[in-house]
Structure formats: structure tokens, C-alpha cells
Length: 286
Image 1 (cartoon, rainbow, N blue to C red):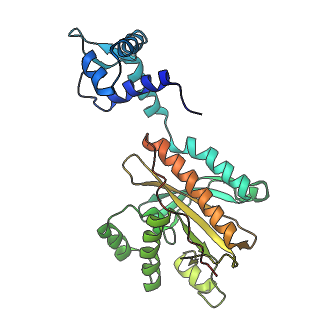
Image 2 (image 1 turned 30 degrees about the horizontal axis):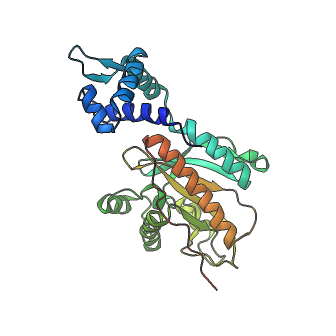
Image 3 (image 1 turned 180 degrees about the horizontal axis):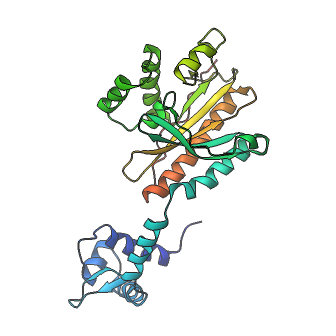
């Protein structure tokens, strides 16, 4: 549902002044900049001044008022990205019958600070802030870092990354940039053993580059980044607990639902609409 023209005009005035916090503007400047008629602009400014959302200086220029600034301070003091993410996480967990975790990078480790679980996965619901090695989630948590920053982490990782892990990280960073998420499946029995996993304390997975529509997949996890106001990764949402084999089409649907949820959270955090961005996961044609 679209907002009414009156509401849109009020928003345009407030946004205009918020985008120029160090400047003040005359009635005529605001009217011309926003292409508002003189009568409409005068009525808007008068109402906003009366409500303390704008302040009129002695020289008749306008700036943001005390009510608007109080709202901003309150939002800054009480704001938490997880407050918005929790509802998206709950929806994803229930609709997909999985566990959804919010993963935060802390140095060279990753911590799940929040979890939501479907009814069948309630045993996974507790949010234990136990750190884990950032691999194999590096590809999604480091997707906005520079090449130098990624190389620095890979060179200092403990225990050292294998050649395959280094290749996986770089490929998944590029994949996340292209599609907005990563997909990991459980490895084949011939791949690293439990002893290998215990030695490195790293989850062993195999990443997917494309999907066969007729294929069957045992998903290990699906992860997507949430961006902050600077366009950097704030945290990632990670879906896991898949106890069923999924077809190629279902996997693509799951990944895109997660991607869209992360886009909505990113839009809220940044205060601006995030572009639709990456294309959905490619499904190989037979």
C-alpha cells in the first residue's frame, strides 16, 4: 500500500533536512528543492514547527527540531539490529522447519548471539555464545572486506587453513557477492574424517556452485550476510538443522527466502532501501 501524497511530502521535508544536518534552509529554498508549491510547503513547515519536528531560526531559516532529534537519540540508545532480526529469524525457522542463528564475527572467531528454532528443533534454541572458528562461514562474513584484509586473515588463521579451505573462502566470497548467500552440503564419506574435524575444530562441508533441478541435497547450512549503514557485514543469518534431503528447486527457494529476509534487515539497519542486488542461485539445466 502506498502512502498518501501528504505523508510523502512530510517525509520528503524531514529527509531533506536530515540529509543536510549542518545547513539551514529558507522557506523558498525548501520549496524549490522539493518542487512543492508555496502554499503546500508553507502548510507543511508550519505544522512541523508546531509539532517541534522543525525549528524556525530568528532569520526565518529552518532546521530539524527538538522532537525529531529526541526521536533520533531514543532510537540510537535503544536500537539493536537483533530486535528486527528476531522476527525474521522466527519466521524462517518456523516456515522452513530449521534453526536460524545470527552469527557475529569476533576477531578470528564466530559467535551465535541469537537463535530461533522450529518446534522440532527446540533443543537447539539456546543461544550459547561459544566461539567457533570462522571457517566455513568466512565467505559470507568477509564478503565486504578488501582483498588485503582477507589475505591477512587467511595468512594468520589458526590452525592454518589448508589449500582447499583458502580456495573455498575466496570462491565463497565471490559467490556471496554475486548471489547474496552461500550453500553448503554435508561432505561425501571419503572426505575428511571425524579425527580431522576434531583436530581443527572446523565444520567440514562442501560448497555448491550450482544446483541440479533433479538433484538431491543434504544441506549442512545456508548463510547470508546482513549489511550495516556503511555497507559492511554486520552479521550473518545461518540456517541449519536440515534433517531431510532437499531437491534442487527447494534449495534455491530456501536460499532466496533467506536472502530476502537479510535484505529487509539490512534496509532497516542502514535506514535506506537496499537494492534487490544479487540474482538467485543458478539452477543447472538438464
